[in-house]
Length: 246
Image 1 (spheres, rainbow, N blue to C red):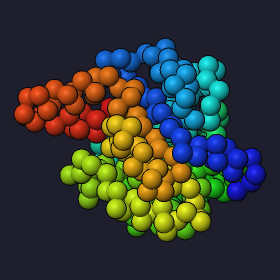
Image 2 (cartoon, rainbow, N blue to C red):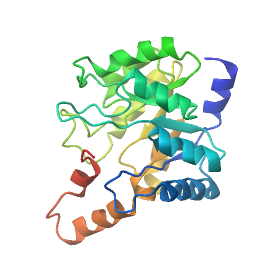
Image 3 (cartoon, rainbow, N blue to C red):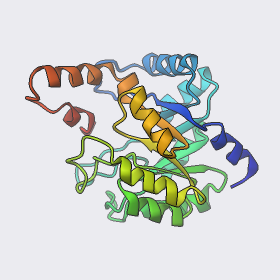
Image 4 (cartoon, rainbow, N blue to C red):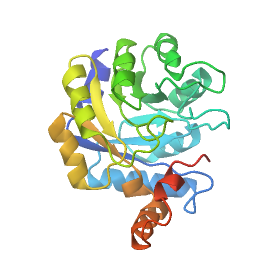
C-alpha cells in the first residue's frame, strides 16, 4: 500500500463512516436526498462516506469533501452476491470517484458461477492504486480476504449469507478475534447491525479501526419499521425489508 492510501485509511481512525444509500424502491428515493444525507454526515463529523452506484457516488463527490467507499449493488435471482459483483462494476465505481472499492469477498457463487472472493486478486491487478474493502460474513472469509491482499476487511455481510441469515446482532467475540489476528496485515472496520453510539463504541474498544453505520442514521423508513416491529410484538421482522433485493 502506498503512502497516500495509508494516510487516507489512517484518517478514519476511531471515526464514524456513514453509509448514505438510497434504492429506487425506497420511499425517500431521490438523488438530492442521498446527497443531503452525505452533507449532513459531514456536518455531524463523519470521517468518510459509503455510497452505492456510480451515479450516487458522483453526485456525493461533487458536494462532500470526504473519502468515499464506493460499491454497486447489482441483484440477480440466482445469487445472493450483490455488492460490486463484477470487474466492470468495480471499474465503474472507481471511475465515478470512489477512493475505496467495496466488494463481496464471501465464498458465495456469483451470477457467473464463480466464488465471489475470486474478484479480489483480479481487481488488485487491474486497478492497483485502488484501496479494496473486502465485505465478508465471518472470520474465515476475513482471513482469506486478507491473504488475497484486501486493504480493509469488515463483516458487512454477517447476516446476509445463507449460513448467517438468522443473525440479528453482531458477533462481537468473532469481530474482536478479527481485530487481534489481522491488525498487522489489514485494517479491520466494523460494519453491520450497529444501531446506537454505544454499539459503535464497543467495536472501537474491541479494536476496530473505524465503524460504518448506515440504516440507523440514513434510512428513516427502516428506522420507523424497526420501532414498529417491536411495538407490534415482533409480528413482522423489519430485517427482511433491510435485506430485500431491489
